[in-house]
Each structure stands twice: as structure tokens, then as C-alpha cells.
Length: 380
Ligand SMILES: [Zn+2]
Image (cartoon, rainbow, N blue to C red; front, side):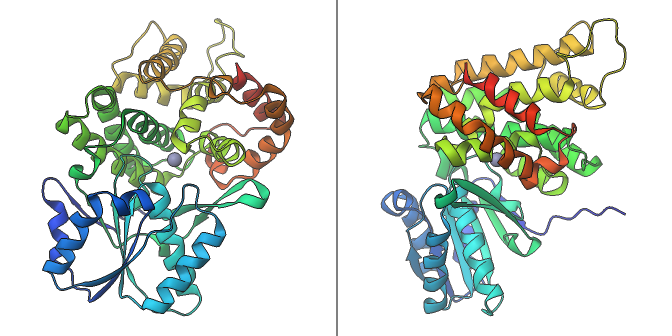
């Protein structure tokens, strides 16, 4: 038996932040990072809360790849302030921190609290997922926490907040829309509902990702990518992810490569690996079922070729082209990481990728040796 639901109420389009003037909550704890706290974005939230007579306090200690200690500080702050609503504003790290903080407070006996997630980047889709990634810096490891109780109550997608995102962040986060949409689409847990959401997210990326990278005044493209990010989040919340995310968590945890960039670099390698297109001769007619799905994805992106295998190869080339156009590194060496240090880390990264919860729904069951090979190829 399968089921599908969307529990998060989504406000989107122009002026969607106005929802904050009309909240049924009395006390809000705002969880954000120091950059958002200093920018004008926070005022866009707070003046609306004041309009609606919602009191608030701000916890702005969120750091990228939120470590467990920071989450504990947030829990302490939440228990002291005793809000009936948590508002997360920022990128994936802020939203993931808020989810984890609220989750641990509730597990510790604090009352059920609403969570409103307001993304300021178009990527991760964290505003509609039951996942949060926290880091244990002592072990260089990222843990995905998964629980339906972490789903935000509401998500607000206001593209005014992504207007001033710099081009390199647009590229990294945009690839964290395309990658999870593709992973959800080929996941062994995929279903008709998740596929519909993933297809739309992929189609939007094909038309609008490069546009939003090239021109940050292209408001239409940025609005579209903001919605695509949420669609991808809904897709993988239902279908889960795959080895691409499992390996990206291991790589990002060790070398502090931004999450979207780690995903982006891995994506061409994972598609080749999952399709097995390097193992098959031209005469062989049987390919794994995910090949057909990658062909569908290629078609959504306007990529087509003679047969299924050349179409998957063309899809890989299209992704590499996108990465080059957006100045995203294609290899670990381009990130300036030392060769010896990297190769010494491969064994433990492969173990972590294999054990990562995301890897379980990959369409091809990987061995540790195969993951080692993928990491080796990723260097050059
Ligand atoms: Zn991701």
C-alpha cells in the first residue's frame, strides 16, 4: 500500500509574505543565520509580524552545515522563549536547523509548535520535506534526520527574497533543484504523484535555471526556480533520493563543498553509473529500467538522440554543459582539493555514502568498490 499527501500549506506568488501579517500565533521564534539577520530580508518578516501583533524573538546563530551543538543552543533558546510558532528564514541550513530544533524540543516534552519555513534560496526544497541534515564535525559526517513530525506547517515562497542571490549561489542551489528532482524520478520509491512533481521541476530547470543564473533581474525566471525547488522537495519527500545525495553528503561532510555543488559534480557520474552505459556494448538490448526514465528526463529538457543510450549520453553532456556555463566545477581537483588528501579520504567517504539513508532508494544497488570508483573518477 502506498499513500501520498502534502501536509504543508504553501503560500506562493507576489506578496505571499503578507501571510505573516495574518498569523493565528502569538509568539514566534525566528530562526535564521547572521547574513539574513543583517540584511533587509529580516525586516520584511518582522514588520509584517508587528502588523499582525505577533511577538517575536530572533535566534540568528545558524551556520552552514548545522552542527549538533548549534542545534542544542537553539533548543535552549526555544525552551526559554516558549513560542507557539517557529519561523525559519534562510537557505537549507536555517530551515533544517529550525526543523531539528523544534523536533528535539518536542521530543523533550515541549508542546506542539507550528513551523513556518521561508526559503531565501531556490534549492533544497527543505520547506516541504520531512528531512533535515545535521553535521557531526568531530566525525566529518552529515546525518539526514527523517520524520514526518519535522514537516513545516506552512511554507512561504516569495521570490522577492531571492532577487539578490549572487550568481554562484543561484548555480549551486539550482543544481540542488535539478538533482533531487532527477533522483526522485528514478528512485525505486517513485510513484505517479512524485513523478508528476519531479517532471515539472525538471522542465522548469531546463528553461529557467540558466536564465536565472545569467540575469538576477530576470524576476520571472527566479520565481519559476523558487517554485521548482518546492516541487522537487515535494517529489523527493514522497519518493526519496539516491546515491547522488548519499555521496554528496559524504563528500560535503569531509571537504565542506557546498551541498548543491557536490550534487552537481556527482550528477553526470551517477547517471552514467545508474544507467550502466559504460558496461554495455551496442549490441546488447537490455538496459536497466532507469534508462527509460533518464530518456524521459532528457526529453523534458529538450535533449534527444538516436537511441536510448545515446540520449542518456546526451543528457550527461547537457548537464556538463550547464555546469560549465554556470562556472560550477566539474571535478574535485577544480575545487582546489589536494589529491593525496582526497584519495586518502575516498575509502571512508565510500563507506559513509553506502550507509547514507538516501542511498537505499537508488535504482542500482551500489557496492563499496563501485562508489570508490565513482569518487576516483570525480577527481579529474
Ligand atoms: Zn539536496
